[in-house]
Image (cartoon, each protein chain N blue to C red):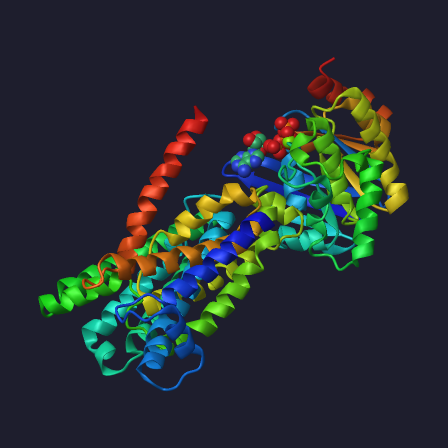
Length: 327
Length: 235
Ligand SMILES: Nc1ncnc2c1ncn2[C@@H]1O[C@H](COP(=O)(O)OP(=O)(O)OP(=O)(O)O)[C@@H](O)[C@H]1O
Ligand SMILES: [Mg+2]
């Protein structure tokens, strides 16, 4: 366990520093850090504090949240293919965001879009909980999530379909690909409280998730209150994923791949995976966000595109490995 | 202690439990016999809340259990084991016994003491740092029993504790179960196909058949009941 956590933590630290030092302005290591810490009010300080710092912090927070939510979801459903988007939060957040762009609310004030996205996530998750009911098994939760995701997806298509001009439509498409470019500390402050709340809820699920490995009936027979555990999971996931999607758009594969890669390293206990996956998710997103700036600096490569490009082959690799082990 | 009245459970058209009435007095062991599919496991599932009874009443110390969720029923002091042993194979034996204590308010010392006590009782204390997957099937049954007993249940539901357990471990298991009511003050509902163990351990026996109670009484009464002989003992 320690042998996994320490390298992961070091990787996150190194990547966080590297993220601060990556960008078109070509600032040196010493100058950059001095400007960040000392803050003389000059242009260097501005770049470091107003542009790069929020970007790095957001990558850290959102990546960590996605990794954590993925590990929790996979533990709850006892299925390594589960991912945080399964309960329909990211889909309904996207719908909120697209509506904000469509109605012009996004252009009228800075937090118009993220706030609409959050509202979308909230409505989506309430719908899911209503549909799944208080005493249902995990299958009802999945089905409710799929139903709400599908509905949100259809409505997003409708909005795109009816968008007044191709420019508006492409703006929505780009937003949905996910990005951390041009985010400010305002975005950090908007997302941070919700993410802290959600992470708190998810990180305390560990022992309950461990008990669940024996099945729902056995866990309940040992005093694990399943309906409360599920509520905690859904609200926690909604908070972290809703807040993340609201400020950065839809970023796929982190919540799916990271727990999957780390599981064999920390052992089969879900409780151990929660922290490891948080660090792993943060590392992956920080790395991806550095990559988008290094690979095509002038072309605004989208973060969600990179995570999918990296995540999908990794996943294929895991599948092939699994197949070999079976035979 | 436990009082069951008119308990019914239907699965669609199938009457798995068709009106059960019985009582389990304090500090006693009730043996439950019955053919495959006679409703024994279903009855345990209704008592601990995994299934919601179609009708009837289940009372523990005068308080109704029907309608409560399994975790709440556990908190009221009902523990159970499963027909197929279910242990946390990737946890040590010591950690296995910690799981049912999560919702109990106990000090660290109390937890450690009761875990040690029960692991010693089932002769697994020396293996406490091993992973549960290294145990034999019979030892896993013993571990499961210890795991439920550390939570100090008032009522213990045991589903086929002797299935797949070799004679030596069976002997140990019988001794442990026999002493449980006297040592901890609990009552036991013991479901088993193993006639000798049931006769040896039970203060009272019920024989189930197609969701109903076919006969009840002590070992001799049950053994000599002509209905039981015909339907169950097949002699
Ligand atoms: N979840 C369920 N859905 C539908 N039918 C069920 C369910 N659980 C049990 N049954 C049916 O109820 C009847 C009683 O089953 P139960 O498992 O209680 O028998 P049992 O006495 O424990 O048998 P065994 O000795 O084989 O363990 C059987 O006909 C079974 O098929
Ligand atoms: Mg059974």
